[in-house]
Image (cartoon, rainbow, N blue to C red; front, side):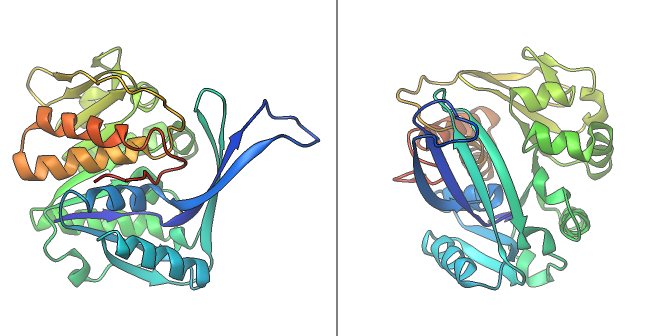
Amino acid sequence: MLGIIGDLVEDVVVWLAEPLQHGTDTAAEIFHTRGGSGANVAACAAALGPTRFIGCVGDDSLGDTLVAGLAAEGVDVRVQRRGSTGTIVILIDENAERTMLPHRGASTMLDEVPDPWLEGLELLHVPAYSFDGEPVGATAVEVIRRAKKHGVLVSVDASSTGMLAGYGVRRFLDLMADLEPDFLIANESEAEFLGLSAGGAPGPNRERVAKTVVVAKAGPHPTVVHVPHGEPVVVPVPPVEHIRDLTGAGDAFAAGFLSTFLRTKDLYEACVSGHSTAARVLSAPGSTAKPACE
């Protein structure tokens, strides 16, 4: 089973119909969807295999709706309930690129993960967002250590350059060197920002996480998987037409990659699945593909 620690929030997706007009009205389309990197991965992965989501959600009607919706997608949901549910406003420009305005709310309040919530897990995935904020940051680190002691594989997603800048690159790399996750997944800007990969080649900080498989995505260009003590695995990305929104594509890739790796233990095949799963969300609003990751 794949387990994910992360955020479950509401996404308010704003598609700008024209350049943003400061101080006045701007025409737009607005959609409300389920969001949160961890929840996005869980929802996609549930279509591919047994999946569990672990987190903290607000003790409110929005939280009720989000928890029920995630469970309806086949996810085994284990959450604490307190505070208010978070919301992320996502502005989508004419190039389908995103600007995110996050209020994580209760997502940062996770302070305990009981042992039964980890039972049956073969792989634990943690978006880097879960290291940012307390008590969730300390909880995520403790759970990773506990999982590794029981032989559970661990994956970390670099999440965003904005989050990494606020957290601190050196601090994040020190944490990764200490935790030694089996996988570290990053897009092109994140991999370069961390100094882990550049132009398909290992970056200057690659040796900081020498025991970790670094999965470096590059949008429409081939994904390069840097493996310890071996040649990189290069996986082409099939073209995708009618891209409308990039939100959730990285989470969908993680879902496809990790679920397939659990089944096949093949990095190339896992990347192919990740690309295919990500392609399904690129034409839909927000992180919720329709049909999602079926």
